[in-house]
Every structure is written in structure tokens, then in C-alpha cells.
Image 1 (spheres, protein in one colour):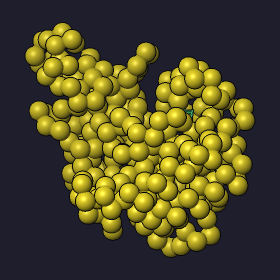
Image 2 (cartoon, protein in one colour):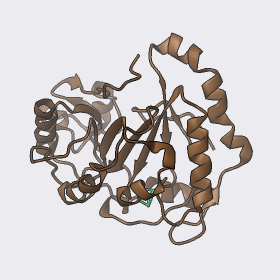
Image 3 (spheres, helix red, strand yellow):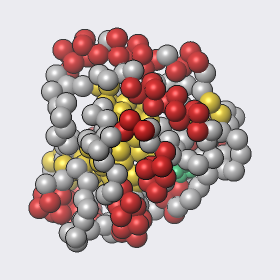
Image 4 (cartoon, helix red, strand yellow):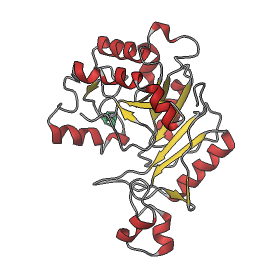
Length: 273
Ligand code: SF4
């Protein structure tokens, strides 16, 4: 299993186990389920999760040993997305596996762990006792919200969990999302349209509205991609076929320019180099 990644907002991926159950409309075209079918590594849905190997679990310790070199080269800390092929706060996972994961995170203080879930309601009860009133400084907690309904439900619980950074992945964006109400609001918002077969459309207006909200609310926005060139407003403005758009806007799937700009910011955190 590869630990390098093409995901634009992180440096590494780590999957302590694989397998998950669909729980939300955003799961309909789950990338990880497609991977599981192709690889045969684990059966998706309400089936046993599969822990990754001991050798694989040693990789973050090696990244920790190399952290100073990484920071010298890139001028910032290394980020690790956990988990791209599972959900850290899945209640069908053996709790001892999650305890082992938090032990590993504690042993790698030079890495910024980005824990992204669709089950934020489970976070509080699944965190280690030593989490404390501020959270661990090397853990960013995030949830996915594909639309306003999912954001409102999940932010209500996430806002009560201490974290050095909390973030939201509005990907796949399949409905509008505004962050202009009462809050609570995250430190960081990833925005992305759905890609691949059966991808659902993302409207340019959703993007400009939520970016306005980020600017007004002091939320760092990371616009990852339009998902499909059909969603990308440049395609219509330039009246070009999709094939030609790749040369003009090659950023992410379906392009990643917003008004001619790359919008890829990161939150300020205690560790920011
Ligand atoms: S929560 Fe994530 S990994 Fe699990 S089924 Fe949904 S999209 Fe896939």
C-alpha cells in the first residue's frame, strides 16, 4: 500500500486498517470502495475491517526520524492524512487498534496528523484520556460535509471537541454550503467537486459563496478541484473542449483555478514553520 499521495493538501497517507460502511450521500461514489474491489484487500460495508501490517505501521516512525530533513527542505512540518481507505472513528473497529494508532501518533510529535472522519459524533468518546482541554498539538481533527445538512449536523458535535486545528472537507460538494450563520466554524475548509464515473455536479456559485464566507470568517480555504471540466467556469468562458482545458487549468481533477487564481491556503497552527 503506497504511503505517498497525490492528494494536494497532505504529504503522506497512513491507513491503520482498511474497510468502512457507507453512511452518507457523500459516500455514494466512495473512492476507497472502488479501491477495495480492485485490490481485493478488504470487503466493503458491514464486514470485518482489516488491520494493515506491522511493517507498514513502522513507516511513520521513519518519517519522524526524517522530520528535520523534511522541515529543512520544505520549511514546514510534514502532514499525514489518516485514513484514506477507512474511517478512524468507525465504531466497527476494534478499539485496541485505535489505541495503537494514538500511541503511534504520540510517538511521532514532528508529524501533523490529519484525522478526517464522517463520524464526528464518535470522536469525543474515542479519544485517548490524555487528549486534554486543548487536544494534542500534532493532531488536526476534521469531518467531511458534502452539503449544508451534513455540515450543520456534524459541526454541532465537532465544535465541542478540543483540537489544535479543526477542519472540514467539503468534498465531494454535492449541494450548497454557507458558513455565515452562528457557527461554530472550522480553521480550515477544503473544497472539491466530485470526480470519476457518476460524479455529481458542483455549481460555481457554491464555490464563490463559501469562499466569501471563508474570507469574512477568517477560515483558511483550500480549493482542491472542480471535479470535472463541466463544472469549471473557465470551460464555458473559453468555449473550449475538455481536452484543451487540461493544458490551461491542469490543477486537480477538472482544474483548480478560481477566477484565474490558485486558492490553496493552510490553517495557522501552533507548529506552523
Ligand atoms: S465514510 Fe469515507 S471511506 Fe467510509 S464509505 Fe464513506 S466515503 Fe467511503
